[in-house]
Image 1 (cartoon, rainbow, N blue to C red):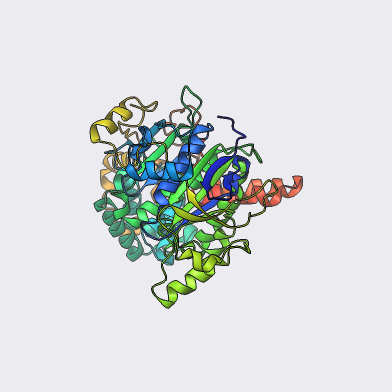
Image 2 (tube, rainbow, N blue to C red):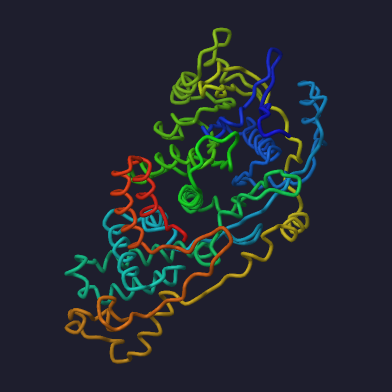
Length: 516
């Protein structure tokens, strides 16, 4: 199928409604109440992007999108929709799929190192207050300056424990480090572990080039993250997806406007991404959504109500598919009216009234035209998917995983030398310092006496470098990222691309680590 060929999304008695591939990286919204057809719409969109060679990433929050890998069309409802829309060329089709799972049960493991995630997202994940988040930032900085790699949770716990025990040694350089804040972070780390969060941190970390695969027929691989269990810890779910988007932004090169995206990223249950979001993080997310278009990434938010998405982000979603909304309460009615006002007016359609009358699989559709302007809103039926509606069996899932191009790459965790091993080894080698008195801890260089000072003439311990990965980069430390951010800002002020480059630097230094 030609990459330039428009994507037929929906049809009514008057017209066909298309999504232009070159406008897919202007982002989109799929909204509607529970049971109105959002998941089927998502499935149809994913298939059409795959057919044009565009890889897709989506989270399967209900566990029923695994059917994308098998031909469909057997459902009576699908057959009814085929007849209604007169789809004479309908052909059941299975699509190339890679299954992923943070817990490693229903797909290949998805992991990140703590250094890559960075303290800002981690603070949200741990539900820290402002003071505790500040202490976490300091701990990351101290670990960086002393060559302590933060790869998994035991690394962070070890550094937190040692910094807490020797807080007086850091007062002059970093300021007070509250024992209460250290304790709160440690407790929240234990809570995160109890939710299974420890499985997410470690190595081998996800190489984002593995999300950009095509099969032998040139079809884009549909990457499906199993999220039915992950959704039981909403903050973990939201943070994982935000981290993935920020890493895509950091790792992909600038490409400008392409004939079609390099990747389309679907955020299902989008309200979980923005619940209790700190203002500073919301600003960064808004910047990423606005600028990731230049990296060739299209972002679609899937949620029950457009109000679930902050206005500053909602305004960037040009392609809209709005399924039915409920109006049982005054607040619901206000939401319906607000949603209707976001569409370009169609004189032949009462948008507000129609929003509450749409049937299952019907939607109000408005897509961007060739000039990037929203089309007039139309009521139409979304086309049915060509793949199976509903989940596949566990045996079928295992067969797909076995045949995956990443089979065996991520399945075995690696635990190389990092902060935990360095700290345990250093303390074991210095038995007199295991219970160091407070007076000794106050002396400058106490921490350096364990690991060697980078400012001294003695060579500092050399940590093993991360293995090179195809298409990937090893993580920069937090201090390096901050320095790069500052240097990049100065450079762009001279050459002129100041806004874009400053944002890249800030995101690289705050939202996560850059791979080299």
